[in-house]
Amino acid sequence: MGRKKKPEVSEKQLLTSLKTLAEDNEDIVKSGIDFNDAFLLAFLRGRKYNLNVAYETIQKYVHVRKRKYVEFFSQLTPESLMYMYDMPRFMAILKHRDPTTGCLVGVLRPNRVEIGALLRKPFEDVLACCTLAADELIYVDDAIKNGLILVASGEGFGMTHFREISPNRIKTALDIMFHAYPFKVKQVHVVQCSAFVNTTIKIVMPFIPRKIRKRMIIHNTLETFHEFFEPNVIPSWLGGNRREEEDWEVYDYYFDRAALDHTEYYETLAKKLAEGID
Image (cartoon, rainbow, N blue to C red; front, side, top):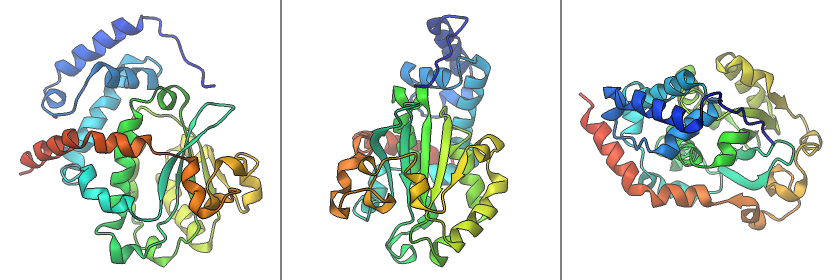
């Protein structure tokens, strides 16, 4: 399991200090984001009880929403993305936890539907779904304490998907997903690599933080991937030993339900952000 660093100052004292910093920051107070104790604790624990780093990460969390990408977040609601949950599964958290580290495992693959035809804003809508899932992961102790393992499949990745990749979009995704959340990414597995995937990796690699690059594992075959994940815990499209219609058995649907349960909060937050756009 992930090692938990014990704070030199008590967790309760650090939480009080972080709460004071947040309450003294007008930008944070007026953001509309619910900075409850569980939320603040996640940033403390995820940043190994470094008060300053936890506070800086919260500031980034607010900044990307309120200023840097306010147009994106002012439209971010579960209701607006309902149509995507009816499409073939492109993103999920597995029920399986890595037995060595206790990490949660997130899987991502290119959508098998012709994305230009059915998705309104292909890259942005996929990023929006990932962001909603990350917001709910903040409240999952395993995700904060042990970290995440990400698995990206290149199956079906083609020119339509490749055209969605641009330096600005890559930077947006990294700013939001890697810099503004308290999670540690312990491994990134890329499997089923085609020529398009390899080209995309070369484009994306310079933008990825050095720590993450060192933790990336490229699999040319599923056999090497299965050295890390047994076929009985992964979906069929990753070489799992089940039929495609049975893939639902390996997915953890908590995060979909949690985001939908908090629809009112996300709608209120999006409205508040929209009102602040000049």
